[in-house]
Each structure stands twice: as structure tokens, then as C-alpha cells.
Image (cartoon, rainbow, N blue to C red):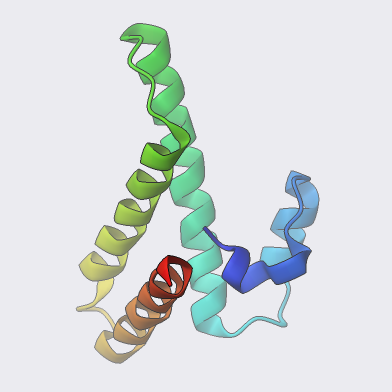
Length: 103
């Protein structure tokens, strides 16, 4: 989901990932998107774990990606009234990611 932001810096090590996100080298929009994606991913994985444990209805990886993507879109939309220009730009950046992956 965030490969378009991290590029070759994608790393499965949490410490490296968090340090990368906290680095001042990112544009503000990209930093917010990375943090939002990390939060949405952690929450979604936790939710999926609980669903599997208590209901036994697992989602596929593709369904999880769609769920996380929708969570991010919804969160950006809910924040638009705070700073309309910033969050509109953020949504455009996020949507550009999804449209470039579908091409």
C-alpha cells in the first residue's frame, strides 16, 4: 500500500519502518499518509486476528488491502474540514497511488 511512498526503503523491521516514517526527509503529506497507513494496517490486522479467533471467517489478503485502503480514504475524508486544502491534496496523493497501481 505504501510502496509508492517508501520505494526501495520498504523494510519488514518495525524499528526501521518507524524510524523511516519519523524521518524529517518526507513531505508533510507523505508523512501523514505513512502514519495513517501504518495505523490503519495495525488496526486492520488486529481486527482480522480477533475475527479469525472468535468467528473463524478470515479475509483474503486482497480483501485486507481493500479494507485498509477504504479505511485510509474514510479517515482522510473525515479530516477534510480541519484543513481542506491539505487533506484534499492528501486524498489526491492517495488516489493517484491507487490509480497508478491499476494501470
